[in-house]
Length: 120
Image 1 (cartoon, one colour):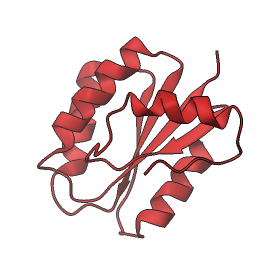
Image 2: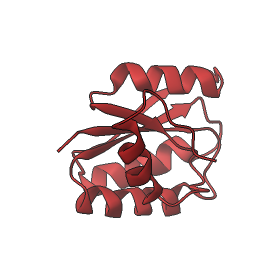
Image 3: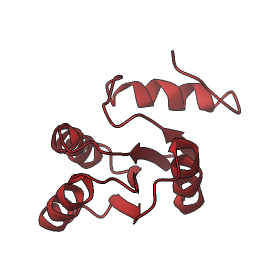
Image 4: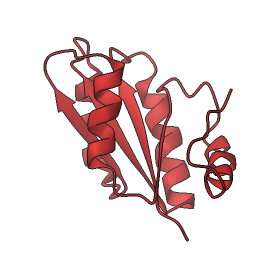
């Protein structure tokens, strides 16, 4: 089974990040071949604190946090996340989960045939 790394860039998402993290933790338990990398892009609200606290409590080995102090933009956050990714396939999704995590499986299915997939 292919390993999948999913990057979630986050910036000032304190209002919705607990819901996102809860969904990610549940999905990652059901799909252990997926690992998730939250990249905190210099948030000035409580996003980083919320993620650190919840990840420490849940101790999920396949959900990680990278964080830095100065906001560098979404592109930088995704690039940094990719540099840490170890999956056979690498995806990124927005932290508001505009698409359900289950869509990742459809993307991976397409990545088995194509070099790049954009889900609209």
